[in-house]
Length: 261
Image (cartoon, rainbow, N blue to C red):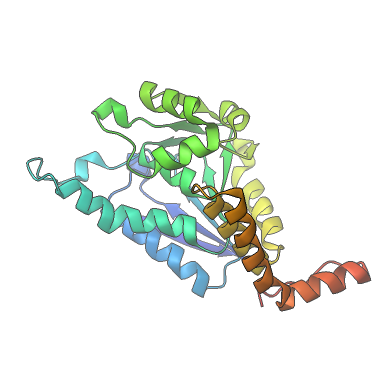
């Protein structure tokens, strides 16, 4: 039996792939748990960047509804599954110190769309399609989409995508800011790897603190609170070896050699 999630380390970049192409990488409890495990392992493995993607021409088509075994008379059943299996995975995507890229080829639908939205950066192939299709089965987004989508595209577009279950293609997703880049499908993984390698050259501590500050600022902080938090995080960086290396490299007009210390 093939593993539901596979991994590959390419230099400083860790690739994590949903590996159920027969169901377009629909996610069940096992897939969510395995993704979470591999995300948490990335820090111990000293990966500088993590890429989450899918096999077989799909990112993730949503939850595996055929595998969901929930007693519909038990009002707490689905919330327990979400809290025990899906929430840890989604929080890991957002809280890892290194950049997490969603490399979306094909469908990112339902919880698959929400997984992509939870990542720091989204890169799309020309075949990518994003959709919040929960309404088609009488549900609402439950992978954080009600939080993340409106922060990326604004309330109006978030409501329109969610209420209409509209499919948004790669070019529209780029125009709306859902994705940062669109790459040709023929060389998608090569282009994503090149992008990730460039990102991996950055200062790990600085990127981790920047990620923390930006994510915290999006959670209803005032401008004054954001300024204070920036100062706290900057103080940590000011005494780091990476900062001194960055200054030395600038003065000596050479590329910096960051170590994450």
